Structure formats: C-alpha cells, structure tokens
Amino acid sequence: MKKRALISVSDKQNVVELAKGLVELDYEVVSTGGTLRVLQEAGIPAVAIDTVTGFPEILDGRVKTLHPNVHAGLLAKRDNVAHRHQLEENNIYPIDIVVVNLYPFKETLQKQGVSQDEMIENIDIGGPTMLRAAAKNYQDVTVIVEPSDYQNVLQQLQSGELNENNRMNLAAKVFRHTANYDALIANYFSEQTGESFPENYTMTYEKVQTLRYGENPHQEAAFYKNPLHKGTSLATAKQLHGKELSYNNIQDANAAIEIVSEFIEPAAVAIKHMNPCGIGVRDSISEAFQTAFDADPISIFGGIVALNREVDVDTARQLSEIFLEIVLAPSFSNEALNILTQKKNIRLLEVELIPDESSQHKFTTVSGGVLVQHKDDGMIQEEQVTVATKREPTEQEMMDLLFAWKAVKHVKSNAIVLAKDNQTVGIGAGQMNRVGAAKIAIEQAGEKSHGAVMASDAFFPMPDTVEAAVEAGVTAIIQPGGSKRDQDSIDVCDQHGIAMVYTGMRHFKH
Ligand SMILES: NC(=O)c1ncn([C@@H]2O[C@H](COP(=O)(O)O)[C@@H](O)[C@H]2O)c1NC=O
Image 1 (tube, rainbow, N blue to C red):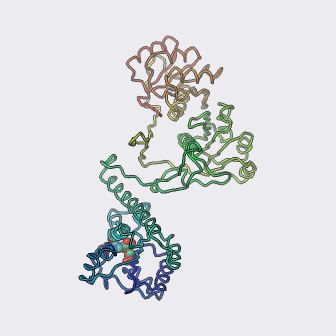
Image 2: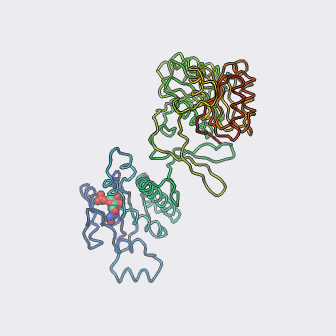
Image 3: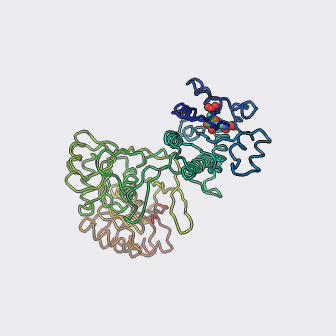
C-alpha cells in the first residue's frame, strides 16, 4: 500500500515542489479544492479529498476534511492491533504526512475595515483539527505547518533521516502554532465583547530575535513582538548602524521613545537605566538636543537619546561629540548619517512615531503570576488642573508645570522633577521616600532650582517636600493632590507665595 500525504494549504507557496518530492518518494497525494487545483495544474497526480471522505466539500468549504476517514487515518496508532483492525474494517487508509497551513486570520485582522463576517470566515476549523490530530500522533505521522520546513523535511525523508525526534519537533511547532492562532481568535472575540480581563489571559507574541543575554550576562533572553500592535514599536524599528541591540538597550530605547512621543514640539530625551536624565523641548531639534544635554551633561554619557524630528547635520555633529549607545529618531538626513556612522559603537535606529490608539496592556511578572493593567496613557491639559493655593501660576510657570508633569510620568517612583523653560534641571528617581527624591533633584539642579517648578508623581503625605522646594527657590508645584494632609502643604506654599496645582491624576511608575 502506498504511503499517503494530505496537503491542504492556504499559503500555496512552494507547495508544488514539496508535493513533487513526495510523489517521487512514492506518496499518494490527497488535497482539498484550491490546493488540488494548484497541484494538478503543475502536473502533480494529486487526488481530491472526497475520494478519501466519500463526501463532497460543502458549506462553502466549512466542511472539507472534517471526516472520520481523515481523522481516523491520522489518529490510528500503527503499532496498536485493535486500531489497525478498526481501520481495515472501515476501509480507512492511514495518512502518513499532513501538510496544512491555516486561513490567514492574523493577516485579515491586520487589514483595515474588515467586516465581522470576513473575520469569522477566516477562522480555520478543519485545518487546526488535522494539525492537532497529526501532532498528537507524531510517533506515526509527520506534520508540517510552516512552509519554511518543506525543504528540510523533504530532505530528511529522502535520506531516511526523519526520526521520531524530528517528528516531535514538528508536532511541538504545530501546538505552538495552533495556540497562537487560537489566542488571536480569543483576543478578537474578547475585544468584540468588551472583555479586557477575561477568566484566562491568553497572549501571543512572535519572536523578533534571540538576545545575547538578558539584563545580566548569566540570564538568557529573547525579544518578542505583539503581532497586532499598530503604534510605535522597537520591533519594527529599522537599525541603520551599529551592533545588535541588547536586552537593556531595548528597555531603555523603549523608555526613550515613550517620553519623546509625549511632545508635539521638537523634543529630545536622554535616558539612563530607564529614567530620563535630560529632556529638552525647543523650536529646533538641535536646540532641543542641546537643552537635553545641558540638563545633565554627566549622566548622558553612555546613554540613549531619542528625538522626535529628523536628525539633521547640526544635531548629528552635537551627538557625535559624546559617547552614546543609541540614537533613535523618525529619520536621519544623509549628511547626519555620514557623520554618525563614522562612530563604530553607536547604534542608529529609525523609528516611526505613531500615536498609539489601541488600549495596550502592561505586564509585570510576580512569583507565580502576572499583573496586567492598562498602560498609563493618562494626559493632563491645562484646563484640567486646579489651583490649590492663593497664588495662581503665571503663564510661564504653567507651561513649565505641564512640561514637568509630562516628564515626571516617566520617572521611576518616588519621582520628583524640577524644570525650567522646557528643560529638566533636576530629576530624583526611584527613592523610597518622596523628600529623598526631592533632595536629589534639588541637589542636581543647583543654582537652576531658583525659579524652577517642581512636579511630583504622587501627593505629598506631609509638607517636608514642599519645605525643601521653598528652600531651593522653587516657585510653583504640580502634583496629584488628595493627601489627608494636603492643607499642610498648601499652608507652606501660601506662606511663601508658591503656586501649587493639582492634576487629580497620579503617575506611579515602579
Ligand atoms: N473545513 C474543513 O474541513 C477544512 N479542511 C481544511 N481546511 C483549510 O482549507 C485550506 C485549504 O483549502 P483549499 O485547498 O481549498 O485552498 C487550508 O487552510 C486548510 O486549513 C478547512 N477549512 C476550514 O475550516
């Protein structure tokens, strides 16, 4: 009896070559409608699936291979006498190889303006059923889901080297593939029904690259992307120059992009260890970079810089004067590239800054689980802040306060930012008490704290931070408000003529 291969593929690429190879190895090829046509047109002696099922393909292809003659042929254990007898009694032939790839659900989801009906019709039922059956019976059946495996498997079959271990690897790929496929469908349905946090959280990510190591050299790591993400992403950034990104590079670069995307005006951000060390907003990108640099000319060394405008020749010259790990921007002019690519150790990344309208989830792993929350995309406009003190901020102070508020949102808690004239002048990050963060920011600002404004990511539990701000010469403060002892802080402000506004929104970042 001839060995049998069942081929039913949505992506017809390279399927003819595979089928040809199988026929040469004396397989009988059985196929479904569209695949059969392609194979027969190429002169391959494939036969229709209904010769196996004895049943026509019906319901517009919703039922083609869903038949016991197919599934018993896939699931029967060859070394099980009872199974073999049952196949014989029912005139069922074993199927030895299954080649299936699925209706393009993900690709359909990625298209614009697709109707619900079209989405539903792109949910493959027969394909995953065959894949899973074949993968379950990998000891006896070879299953191929990835077209990129055709050649390799064919070679192994030709040389007689296809062993159980290879078949198990192919089966493992299948279960990952169907799990990924089902996760996309599950998420689509959850989205349609408005279920943000369902009883089981299924996520699926696609590998971008294996990384040399993780946060530290003894940790293994890889970078995965969300295949459906539509906004700015490092996974789709184009690296124009330099070595491969490391795990820490990706984290820092991501933080840099998130901050620089807050600003509409030309802005530059320098990042160290996930915290900004300098942010500048100016009329031109080279001035913005100079401003970010001047904010903290020490910490920027070895840092990551993101800019929200094309890097021009002036900016490139400034950037090339210091050691930077990465520069990210929407584009680089040719002259800028000529300058920057002379630096061997810098990485240059072109990243499209697209406003992200999808509500993204953010994950934090904890021992034995994962915390899931919506991304902090909270924004405050001038009209939304309320003045808590006797004195209102001046126009200039208000501008600085809103700038500082955008900055403090991206600093690890407890976070304090001092800013003046669209430049951060002092940043206190990740302290265990708020006044500690303020002291760091004030010390860093030095003389520049005089006339600066202060932003605090969360309310003041006591007036000590405001007292430190008074001493440093800060003139206005922005904070969420809402502490039981707000009045104590207000009193200190009023005594010293400081303006304080509330945002009503907290920006913890742990
Ligand atoms: N319904 C079925 O019995 C069935 N069996 C196989 N398919 C899928 O049909 C596609 C191939 O169809 P065609 O050979 O007609 O182009 C493959 O993606 C395969 O996964 C089916 N389609 C959807 O469920």
